[in-house]
Length: 280
Length: 215
Image (cartoon, rainbow over the protein chains, first blue to last red):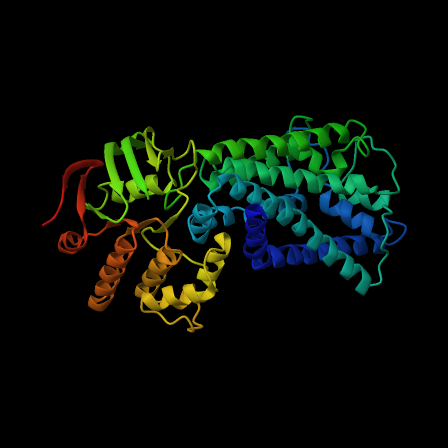
């Protein structure tokens, strides 16, 4: 029962009253949408693509990531701006709330509730809900824009657009025409597990160092295609569904579940002995 | 009946020893004063007793139950630590109602009574973020006493208060003692501490260097 009260409090204070969490994804979605539509128009006007783009293309644009980077003097590493924005803003938005709560009003609630476990589990649920809501707002904002501009709302993808947008050159890809739900959903699950990892890490080091670690993990994943770097599973383009030498989605799902489980349990154990001082 | 036993407690944080081999026994119906300069370990000892930090060595027991082993926090405790923090967008009454909602032991009337007892108006709709330092302090004290807990821990409760506010705090502390609570209070002003305490523990560099009953 105390857990439910905690969760209600966290949803209210950490999500519903968190303006940054509610508005930032909408703003990001609008900016990315404008960039996406601008590119599509330029390609269409130049005769590089055969027809207009759809919502499926937008999802791919959002979560696609980048091509496999092969280090070479003639091949400079290009920062995947859209992808890194989508995935790094959310851990930043979720960074401080648990600790502000713990060193503020939440401290009174924690002692009155008498249970550290309930506090941690509630924060875990808050973290998962916050991440899913962030991606949902992003998707819904784009859907609304597609509706207003009477653009095609379907899960069709256009390989001619994707080849140009993601600069697919020498790499061998499967010719796909439909974006399955599972493919679009896995990046969100990766985001959930990485944000949980960050929250757990923040019990061991200062929250800002947790954020730096997560940032490095994403950057390393963009730099190197490897089944060991979890960020690769947040890039649709690098799945074996698209890229012939890509990472397995099944392995990705397993990795996400493992990281989520380990983070929740490690945090639970750590928080039992965590010293709640005035300042972290 | 309530009894706190602090048994050879040592706390080290990042290789700094902030509490060193502290032992004390405290009983209901008495006021225990903690005296010492900033950094002497008063607040840290309070945090250990509340259960917010775990001792590196030694134990704290509440009625025989060891904190961190048998129980995570004392069953019935109200506290005010350093700067009270509540939700900025709620009024004083709304904040206390939210806290009281966790245990659901007291009525709204009782919450209003506690707010009045510290000299605030429960009908005041002003948001907490617009409170003065003194008002914040008073609300923090109201939160600590409203549920009539067995243990009341107040860290520098007279901070930011004027003469009348300090008088009110003394009165509240005596009321808590009278109803049988075990009160632990720290204060910079030794004269106030001597006036209100039954026993005083003097701390210096994390050690109890003196324990006495003021005249």
